[in-house]
Amino acid sequence: MDQPSVQQTYAPSSICFGCGPANTEGLRINSHRIENGLRMEFTPDGHHQAFPGMINGGIIGTLLDCHGNWTAAVALMDASEDSEPPCTVTASYSVKLRRPTPLGVTLTIESQIESLGDDRAEVSLTLKAEGKLCATGNGLFVAVKEGHPAYHRWS
Image (cartoon, rainbow, N blue to C red; front, side):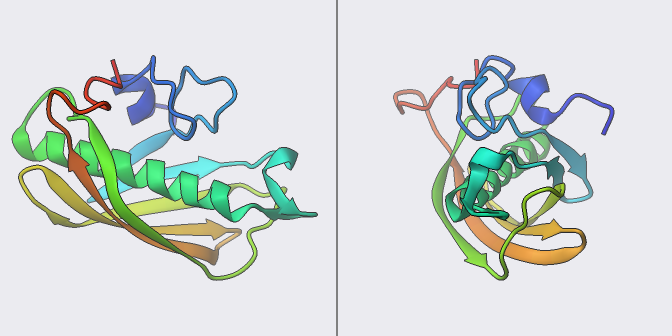
């Protein structure tokens, strides 16, 4: 993962709490291409805990949401052969917390495109810590048009 992330490449001035490179208070995730999806690693800090030694479920949800959103945006960009991804937003997502997610280890999140339409994508996600599955998720992400409050948010 020596290459710039999709967030750094396509939205360097984004202020999104989960994925915005310009948000110094945020999670600033870095997602990279894999076959049919994206992969990222994230090392939580102490202030991401729900209780001693375990990561807050809301942080896990944000990691999955933002990573899934970027998975959809990149897939839609590739499918339309555009040079920049469309601005996508979360229409729905769900998270299953399968075991406590520990602090002090690097988390690995992978996403896969399950279905792709003209302006939307369904994405599945997994979050692992030290090879153990801690959370799964699914989401529907939709490209927005001019007039939507999120339109051009990555510029």
